[in-house]
Length: 178
Image 1 (cartoon, rainbow, N blue to C red):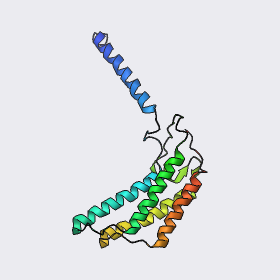
Image 2: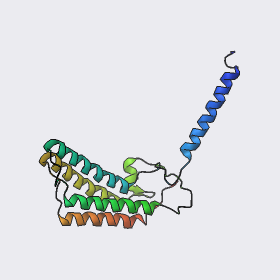
Image 3: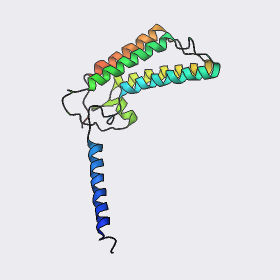
């Protein structure tokens, strides 16, 4: 009983409560650079192609010792398409830089990618589907054939159109409840 009323224990409990309040305030505070919030489809697609191209290059380099002429024009075009899409999506998501940013609440990894605030959207599902198909073809060719696939111009144009449609419809998306 004496330990509970000890002033040192009470001071420790008070400091612990203050630290908890500070941590909660930091957790709930947000800035425009805060990585928290919902998952971004544009950034995820950009990260996917960056990761696949790096992993594929390292795989071929370590297995065959080849590091020259491994990366194809098609992969550079895909990286470019996805970089522009990711950057444009970030710009479209940005509100007035002078206003404070409120965190969007995530609904989950896949739910955030296929939906806006109003539910699943076809343009998002289309982008995920075609990105997945090309990613599987790419990974299969790296592992089975030890090459970076050379996608034809029509498939690359198709990916450009799919990404453009996503960005066009993104301007009309419902903003999720905050």
